[in-house]
Amino acid sequence: MSLPEERLWRFRKPEWLNSIWVRNAGVYTAGGLFSLAFYTLLDSAVWSKSSRNGSTIHVGFVDWLPFIFSALGMLVISNIEKSRLSSESFSYTGYSSSVAWKARVILFLGFASLAGGMAGGVTVFVLKYVVPGVQWPALGMGVENLVSNFLVGLSTVVLWAAVRILSGGITPFDLGAYYFKTPTGKLYTFE
Image (cartoon, rainbow, N blue to C red; front, side, top):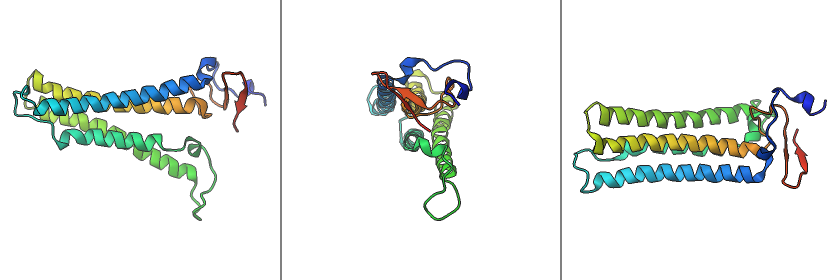
């Protein structure tokens, strides 16, 4: 079966996506987004303890907890070996369960932690800032908490997509064709 016959979608993946430069740009963009998320939450925490904060509301551990769960989810998701998600080989532990099943469970736990962190950020925002009717300068701390959790989630998506570009992963444009082309034009295929 030739390569075009294995394709599921009509549209081809653009050739520029097969570049190591695009992958590196995606990885660095994900790192920048995560750094921006951490800076946003750190800025909120520093501002809450400054003399410019005229309210009695301050950033505490409860405000950091959603970010910690989001970051933990990102760590788990980004450390899953992508080839293990589709392999059906049996594990070397002596049990009959497959490696793919274990990897999918761990990936689910990572996404659950990421989503739990995001939901926790919304919960903290609503219960700590919206329900008591906090006015804008102090309300900015809750908004920054939401923004930081959103940026961690966006960073995870960008990192996942960037790593899968050259690792033979499945993209919406090219299901079934596991190949990439180097900048010199050499074509590599994976099975």
